Amino acid sequence: MSLRDSHPVGTPSWVDLATTDVEGALDFYRAVLGWEYERDPTGEINYVMAVVDGHPAAGVFDMPPEMRNEGVPPCWNVYITVADADEFAQQVTAAGGAVMGPAVDVPEPGPDAAGRMVIAADPTGAVFCTWKPLAAIGAGIVNAPGAFTWAEVSTHDNDAAEAFYCELFGWAAGTMEGVPDSPTIFTLDGAPVASTSASLPPGVPPHWKASFGVTDVDAACEAATANGGTVLMPPNDWGPGRVATVADPAGAVFDLVALSDWPK
Image 1 (cartoon, rainbow, N blue to C red):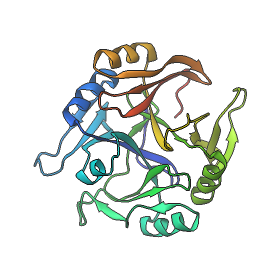
Image 2: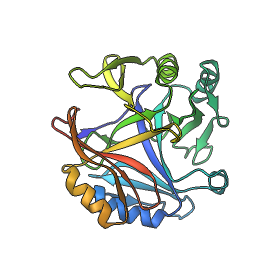
Image 3: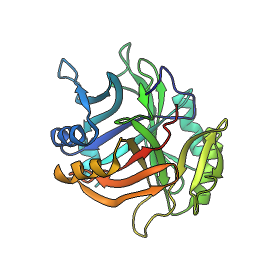
Image 4: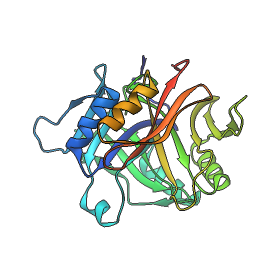
C-alpha cells in the first residue's frame, strides 16, 4: 500500500470522473475496483469520494450542464499538483497552452476550500487540471489495487506535448528501458510521473487517461463487462505488468493495470 500525506509539485495527484450517471458509475466502479464511498452529509455538494482502505482515492461527480451542452463525453480528469494556481495559469499561456477559465477554489472560496484549481489544455488540445492543495492534498493512496496508478496523455503530436509539459512542470522526457516501441516516459527529479500514449488512432481527440490498479486484470475486465462496461483493449502483458483498456457504461475510458512490482 502506498499512502500519501502530500504530493510533490509537478506530480499527478488526483483523478475524478465527470459522468452523466453518478449512481450507475458508483455501482460499476464498486464492482470493478472494490470502491467504497463517502458523500457530503449535508447533501449540498454533489461530489462523491471514492475510498480505498479508508483513504481518498478518486472523485465522481455529475457532469454540469455547460459540459454537456459543449458535447463533452463522460471522462476521467487528471489533476497535477502546482505551487500557485494563479501563477500557473499564466505559465500555461506562456508555454503555448490554453486556460479554460480563471483559477477557482473548490468546492467554494473560504475556509472550507479543498484546493484551488485550474482547467487547461496543452497545445495539442488535451485537457488537464491542476491542483493547489488547501484542505485536501489529492489522493491519500496511490499505486495499489483500487487506487490511481498512472496517467498518460494521448495526442497526435507527441513532440509538441513533450515540449509543453517539460517546460511547464520541469519534467524530463525519456523512454522505458527494454520495452519495444516505448512511449515517452516523463520523470520529475528522476522519478517517473506520467507518459504519452504509444499511439492515438486518427479521429480520436487528444486527452489524458487514468489507470487504476487491480490484482487481476482479467477478472476486473470480466467484472466490467458483467456490469455494463466494454473492454476496448483486452488484457495483455506489457512492460512491468498486465494492462487493459475499459470504458464504463457511460463511455468514460480508463486503464486497468496489475504490476509485478508496485512502486512506493
